[in-house]
Length: 279
Image 1 (tube, rainbow, N blue to C red):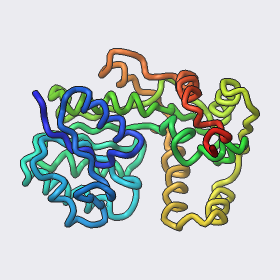
Image 2: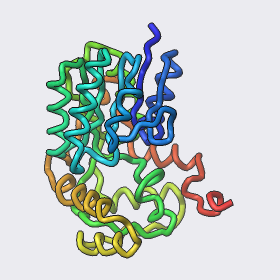
Image 3: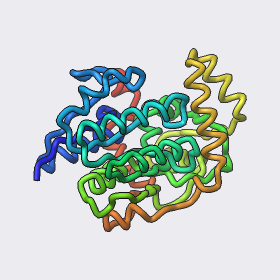
Image 4: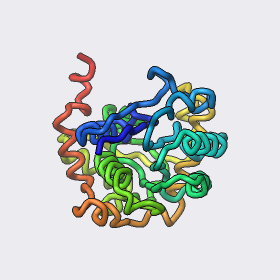
């Protein structure tokens, strides 16, 4: 049965993929963001009602991250308004190993709505659609936490899991943890990309302070610097965040995408070809 689905963050890494999946299934998808009509702005709670109006279900991605100050109040207000608007179910994208994100999960779980929580590890797409792309193009990936072993997960897998649990009520009340099938250090990830891409890319371990100084020198705002420092120090330093989950296989009936397969898939897009991107 066709349903009206709200995708908050529908132009982002997972939101755009979820919106596409739902549209292909025949659902009426409404993307909500600052540039949509009507506009949706997490920092302006007056925009929530118009986005939620007449919707049946919603996929919620909080920008920039559930760890930032203000997220709890925003999630609480959104879920209260969603219940008032008559939504039947929401799916919240959360972060694996983030205590602040788990506080937001509790708000959703106690909202009175049907819900599923999807906790994700770090995305493969950080190297192709996000913060680390420029490092790959420049040939040097300078990042802290060289000892961290991360079960990088593919955004396509996250989106497919979200699509499934959003529309399948047998997952109501559950927490699904999505990771890749194996753990990798940043060095191992970079070496895999270098071998598959066929270019020299080096991993340069640096301290957290050096990383902060680099972001500050690049003119990034203090809030951005704080967030990335938190994600490295608190999230990657959390042993729980370095555990492989098999929930992708449980939900989708197949293994999660391996990092090497992600690289091969991304090679077909030319995103790592600076000459192509500059033309």
